[in-house]
Length: 231
Image 1 (tube, rainbow, N blue to C red):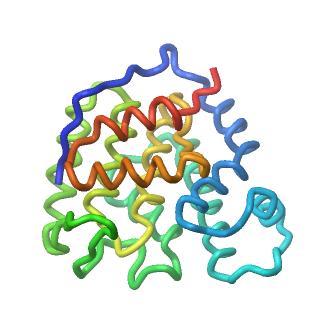
Image 2 (cartoon, rainbow, N blue to C red; image 1 turned 90 degrees about the vertical axis):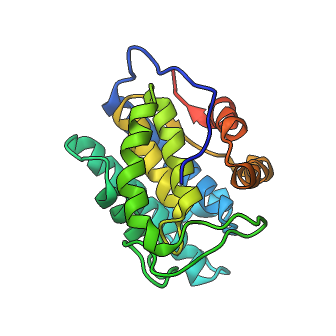
């Protein structure tokens, strides 16, 4: 399922140096991981995430919450590896590889498209039926790549497209955010980092997006509040 977007955003020209971006984001990884986990309702605080990523177990939390944080870190590590290889094709395999890590032990099936119907809480919008997902992915991905004139637009659309269609049982936004950041990072355009403090605004705008299938407000939010370019 595609959506409407009328606003567009320019890329950084010349692009930022990719190796330097990777080094910088690795230094800031606790912040990025904390924000991604927090948007999922994970109770780990920023200092606790820092400590856990240093290899020290934190008491007083469910194992599932701890594992979610570690899987997000693992997803980012895979992202860095893929960017360095510089020979990965944008396609189903990339999405599946990220979801296999992100949704491990959270979903009925991870690393492959869902085989049943799902819904999105807080909205009447219904994602596509499971037996439509293969054709949707195969036909719409080239359309999105073609209609996006900048890598910034493509990254934003890829995140929203994955969230809207819910190709997987769980971890759709995290999976799509990693794909989004793969596009940004591999093209020297920075990183999308939705802050924990902006969680209410993000959730509100995402519900608006699901209800209207119009993306202008949420992409404006991404560009103004979440896109970190380190210029």
